[in-house]
Image (tube, rainbow, N blue to C red; front, side, top):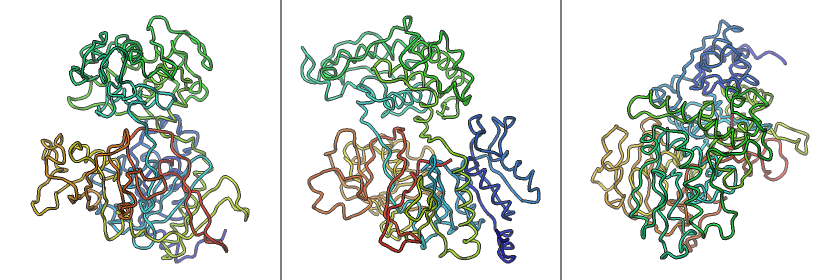
Length: 620
């Protein structure tokens, strides 16, 4: 390959680049950048190095396990290119210190991320700072690179992303039928016991499940009430009469005793579910487990008299792919609960644990709980490797795919540095060659979507919800943060009163969190002005009062006003392909591999063809 022209080499050496992410793609990218001639680089990554990273993130070695990815990647690159000026940050890109002014100091931003929230955040900051962004991602043998430039190409959020797959709470709590249901339940349990508890992530039997109503011998709606402390259920005529105790408080009162927890979760709660006889008319009923008499073998599992072989080998290959027996799951549960209890006790008041796919104890806890629940309901058990992949939305990464993606990033970066933004392309790695025999397929980037609420001139979104039931806290957490990807929103009622209902200043609007929107005079047709100072992003939110939703759905986001026309008056929920996103709950589900979208290809002589677009949930 001929050397780069001298003039371009000089531009490259003078270009200040920000690399976001130092994982699979990030390692390859940093190596490529310095070998191409980029000499002024900053890299940001919050993660630390895990044993499982070593098979593909070649800048890291065994002695680096437990250290900062950003720091070690910088050290490794400087070892073979000492003249480069590389600064690292062991921090989250979503930290307030990395705002618009920080981004403005760079000529180019290169993403090597693995999650939607961070990608959205960087996209908005690059738009605000008017800095070109090269986005990337990989998923197994698939990969993609695209260039984002304000006013020239579509931004990352111009194309609506598929909503995360979710299930009704009653399925998770009462009638799981797939391994993923049990894994989601186990992650909710982790948060209820040790993390940030969410009222929507309750793990106890759902007494309001409509399918369980009209129990034999009771009035319609009357069900047995499970006591939070694990005592036998007590009959009551109204679920509202039940005295509920939080799972966390109950666990603390019982000193997180593993056996007591086990009996509550896998025996007493299951016996209560069995009392809801309507649930089991067409389903196989669950079995309540006895702590002292669990089998040490199970179809598909490996017999073991203890859990000692299971612990201490996260990332050790074949051991992670062994399916634990129910007895091993119990022993793992005991050990994980004791360890997590000790970790939580060392936290300052008000601080909690955070589930992380790279935290061995947390993953063992979720695996043990998910498999015990699966055994209760006759669902196939999963290995530690499978549970970690499903719980963490992980698709096994392939080093060669990451290397190809990193090379593609640098090729597009060179065009940007050379001032040839019109020559940039979106490039996809396909599983199979196309009719022209190509694995790498490029296309002309799409123009900005005029209906995009992030990069268009008119930033507004409609949201259907029940103003009489929807609270301010739900508005902030579910809609603004989880769905619209804001980080630190401030919300003002745009009626001339200047009423602030959500503030990013801690404690300023805490007293309003549990109030319904209607109580604050947010009604049908109300317009809320939302501002996120960290993203330099403003948005108008127009409220549409609606009381009729399908089970499990409590709001609908509409980004295209055309969807509000009378043809939608039959209240049918929008189809997947419409420009609407429905959010039920942020459950963790296996990611979709690709979504298809019609695009113009740069080398196509015919009509538009479909190209695979890697899911935003993927990347390495």
